[in-house]
Length: 208
Image 1: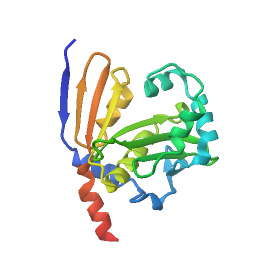
Image 2: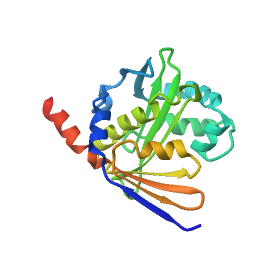
Image 3: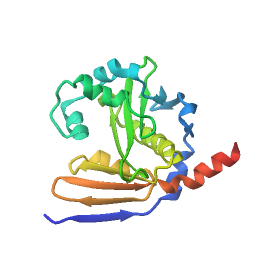
């Protein structure tokens, strides 16, 4: 099987439509934010060290399939070091967000991690609780994360996604951002151009 390359420019009408469905944070200090997804009230906030227990429980509740598609491995109990990697991170290079239900249970998590040698680029990822899928949670948390990452200087997002993870591959093409996908045998290498968010961010800053 050869390598397949696809490139799609910004879909500005879609992007504007999505950004009209706020509220959106402009900086980390503006969180937590309360919003409605799929008829349920959720809270968007940054991950904190005290979330370790919540994240372990949320991971435990994920299906084998969801764990495999997100982490590309079989489901195993996470070590203390692995959990700490998600909560006790350096704020200057990493950003991790949660969507929590009205009981504080995490229903979605997404993170952006700058590359050391190329700090204008960052790797991104996202996972949604099985019972909360198909409600727009993944798209909302990723767009919120993208706005914050771009506001902090990240120009490009990168990710390696399993070729069989069709929901995630469809999602990255429905954010309205310029996207390129390079498909190999089992993996798809994705790039998203976050500079397409600049006009919206500039308008919001000007409005302040």
